[in-house]
Length: 104
Image 1 (cartoon, helix red, strand yellow):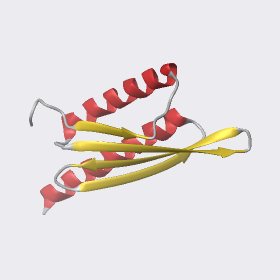
Image 2 (cartoon, one colour):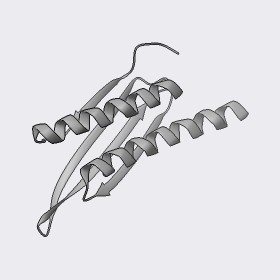
Image 3 (cartoon, rainbow, N blue to C red):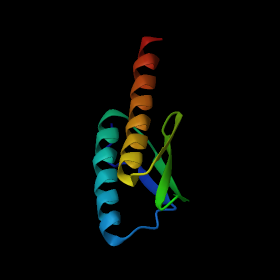
Image 4 (cartoon, rainbow, N blue to C red):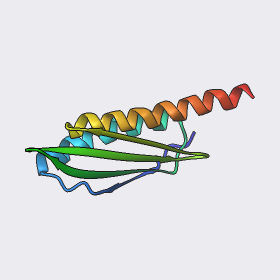
């Protein structure tokens, strides 16, 4: 496995500085976990925010590009849990693919 990590591309993350710091930390943790288990070129994350009543509903779409592409999409009122769950799904899909590819 190579030392250099793939790149992260964010779109639609128009956040307050405090939120941005938490999001960057969360992404960095997952980037490290994913890089330990799976070689990838890039991770694309896109956030859409919509208003539901008086609160925001966050939709986070993720794409992990390696030897294969993996997609995940989570919608939640809590941005951090939506982001975390999206990255977790991408990581799990990549692990599953890696496991099943070895069995063939």
